[in-house]
Length: 105
Image (cartoon, rainbow, N blue to C red; front, side, top):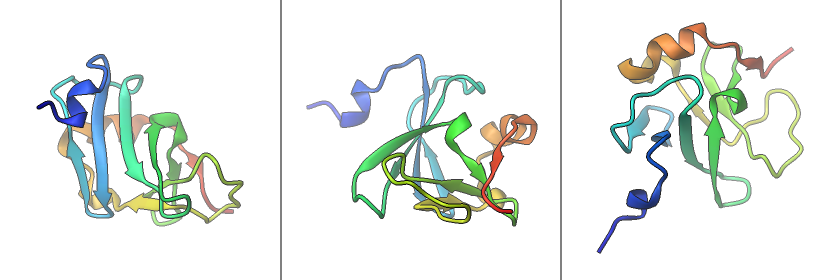
């Protein structure tokens, strides 16, 4: 029996946001700013979403916020987040040079 993750398109570098301390790599595709895809469980709608790099917002503390695409959210609201200190080494350079929308005033 195949795992659900075996069906993810291999041209993307897939990651799963398990908690604010854990971003787990799901395949061996080399990450680039264009191919990163992060799966996260949304606490608002109780579904799963896929975030591209452009969908991630920067928190006032320098952490990363993930928002529900189905909910109209105001600044400061988010459904999941990742502490910048727990960013996997393979993603550090990409995230350092990326331009994130701020999630604060």
